[in-house]
Amino acid sequence: MNSDSPLVHLAVTGGVATLTLDSPANRNALSTALIGQLLAALGAAAADESVRVIVLTHTGPAFCAGADLTETAAAVASGQLPAARLGEVLAALVECPKPVVARVAGPARAGGIGLVAAADLAVCTRETTFAFSEVRIGVIPAVISATVLPRLTSRAAAELFLIATPVDGVRAAEVGLVTTAVQAEALDATVTSYCTALLRGAPQALAGVKALLRRTPAETLRGELAELTELSLGYFRSAEGREGVAAFQEKREPAWVPGIQNS
Image (tube, rainbow, N blue to C red; front, side):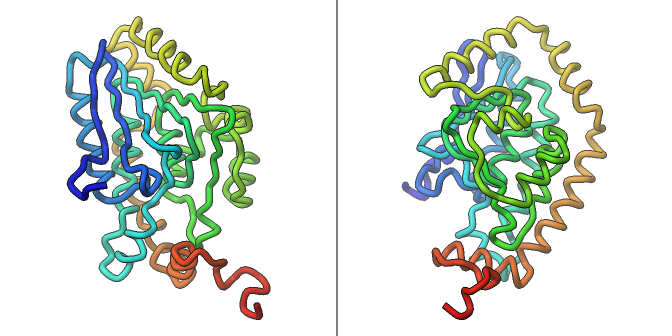
């Protein structure tokens, strides 16, 4: 992909703004550039009076791989980690007065699941997989916990955060991570049906319902995200975090996996 190619596309049709993550070469990873473009597109959609509903979708086989670890590995020394702006995106999605529907047709990992959880409604295919892979690379799902934990029971959160193995769309729907999981051929029709229903709602009433459901003042949410961002960055900068990211980049097991030192 050309370095100047847009990583996020915005299209508006019939009151529905579609925001498309378009960086398939790195599985729509959350790079600094993609985060910036996503924030800009979301802001434009929120400000457009013709837009009533926002759909967040993607190109390529993956919805979002989470933080861009290639950029992260190169940025540890400078401190300008892409994860530093993830909280801004989550806050923008939560605070957006217009309903946001996530259309997930492929794997979501780590920070990508934070986007799904921040959306008001999320539709995935039954085969779509979700994994909180952070502990496998020496970090924790700190920032995204602000949007993910309200969706899950404490037992489900412990399982998903600690075990870190992928679960499919059916399991994700069972634990509340997504609204529904459908057959692949029904994905677009289901998203359209949600959008059609949302368009029948009064704009101010929909915004009011979003605020009612969250019941978290903007200042409180952003304060929490700021604290969680600092916590997250500390793990990325730690010895384990650096080793985990390096191991991922080098396609090997990290040093803490038993037996690796003697292999």
